[in-house]
Length: 182
Length: 377
Image 1 (cartoon, rainbow over the protein chains, first blue to last red):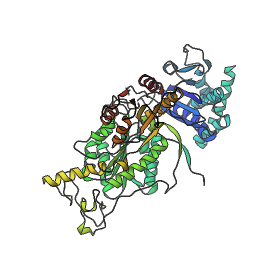
Image 2: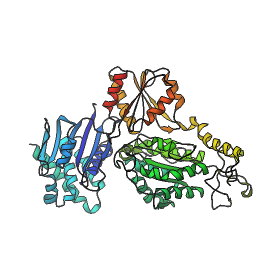
Image 3: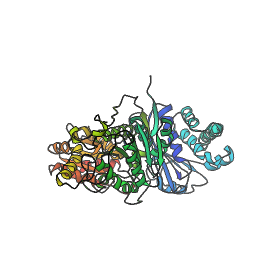
Image 4: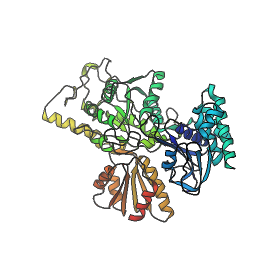
């Protein structure tokens, strides 16, 4: 299973986690010249319910498109953290929203916690960009794609009027994650 | 000039494949996990002078594409699970009236509403036997975003070439995953159009076998006039109960596919030269299988992968030949043994066939397959 780097973005349906995964994969595939596959799993509900988006990044071609041993996990809700942390590898990155995930899974993980949704709402200015804050944080913590590539991938996905908002969200997530890791 | 490259979802790639093949009409009814096909077609077809119609349900959608195809257009519908069940009566109608059309069915859990967002491979029997009666069946099961594009183009080609419905059946994982795709240039992939009549309109018969097993098809609305019915019919399209005609026509319809299996059957052999344990897999499960075969080889086990790209007609003679020189087959699939049963039928007891079945909405992972390889080697 070498050469694969596996990320999982999880939370509740409607939080934009599938999009966060897509942007991470686009950063790797389009801007960093790596191989990437993004897949998703969600419930039948339009909103709510545990949702996840997985991204596999590799230097060589990717056969199995789903996660095997997760290198980095984002959990924006307690339910997602409980449901999707079982295959996070020992020493893997676990990024959680410190307001919403109070119970951490047992194991030796690199846990980084900060109020992701609250940051989007009160510091960036719109709760809807919480997924981009989280994406910035995942880019910072994993280093699996370049910061420049990821920022380009974010901006390529966003309507003109919201470029600054998303840029701010991405960079705030990046910086907050570095600070929270220390 | 550099080729156009994109990071794209399977369903989107399927829609672009249809457009590449010259599809000009889409009739559909949205259903998870196939809706993105309809979404792309609704956005793109009007720009190309095509028509997109959202029908009242899947039955109507299937009827709409049959009607549109009879006017000469290449046509597509897309659906999933319960939608495929609803389409079946009209799929039979397209079989007996010999109307080219392509159906993309994204496989989700079932029966009934089942697990709308979960992956499955449990529609492969429905693809062949969902509609009643003897009839030809062509079903393609791509395993990547790139292949979903290319196999959709091939589906149109086969539909046009053999005047019959063709199904493209990605599982939900292949349909919803995103990966890199390199778009073929126009002209790079073969695009086949149906054979048009060369006889004068007054001499035209829609099922005239003097032109072979696949008679030319005229367009409704042109100077050619002909009759279309779901009843067993004669060369001129009108109903008949004459035993000899009915028997011959039924056999001809099935023969269109059976006599051309080598043209239709497509598969990939990976690490098969010296393989002793052969995994037969398709769709996303074949990606897990390839991963497992690579791991097995690292451990010195002679494992290989036989990947189905065409599911119907099934590669019967290839698997029979392989069965005479291997120790065992493994058939992982996201259903309770549909492909496994077919493989057993092909290999005539020459080697045991070990199924791995999952219907819990989770993919079959490489470890499950690797464990089985180790067990039966």
